[in-house]
Length: 124
Image (cartoon, rainbow, N blue to C red; front, top):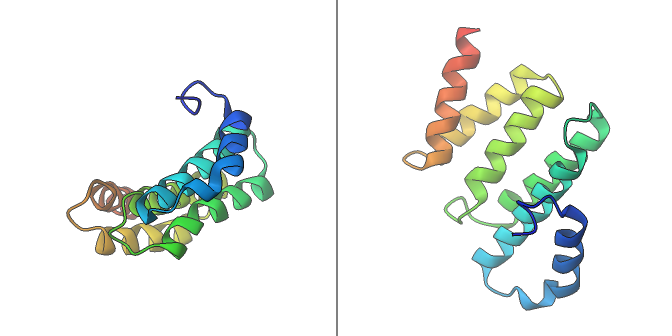
């Protein structure tokens, strides 16, 4: 896919051009997730907290628009937590979000990863 190939501007352009075609909620959630992934990819390893806040907001559009059991919601929440923890260096807020994800996504991969992150942060 263009996303894996690092063609972030093409991904964003294609989605923006074809956004009316995505009518299924699951597809819409995946499209929002792909847009956020493309924004994150464009930033790469840059240390730009304001830009990373924008990416976190892009990820949060997924859980804001769709129920917790929609595919992509847990992943978007987890990526938001990682941005808060790693890029914004706010471990307390990240911990709170990971705890929420662990509870809401119990039994799903995102919930399991969030639970691991909670244990890791509490141990540090």
